[in-house]
Image 1 (cartoon, rainbow, N blue to C red):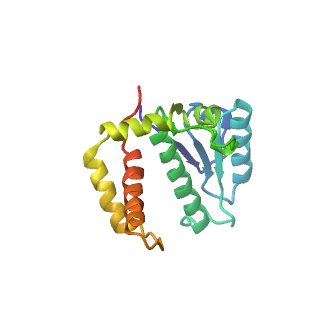
Image 2 (tube, helix red, strand yellow):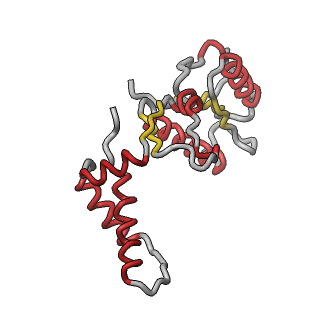
Length: 191
């Protein structure tokens, strides 16, 4: 429960099919620690087995041959950290909802949420909310006001806007626009 990845590093040539973790909904990575033995074959066999079973897996194998007792090389360390970050992101998103605000805009297909990909690769479901509903919630104050104040403080400190307008009303509109945008981030999940 709560496991979001499987990283297996082995130092021996073994019967790959007998030791695979077959949990299909978590990312897997295989590595081999001792390239003076048949490590490339071990990792390739593991990747082939996972592919045949339809389970997503990643190979982590160093560029240079080294002895079994050598420290991890920089390229292997970088790959392990990259896999760990990606696996953690997947673990945090699993069984959550992707809330799409608005819908396909002006027929631009890039605005369409790839529901099946989110479900297959991240275990996420998709939900939609129309921009009219966003406006209603902002007007009615249905959002986390404490989080909104925190967001506005961050926007004030971190976002630099360059608007070259002569009207003070136009500048006020720009500030108000940031105020509304930041509220969108803190709307409660729809049920």
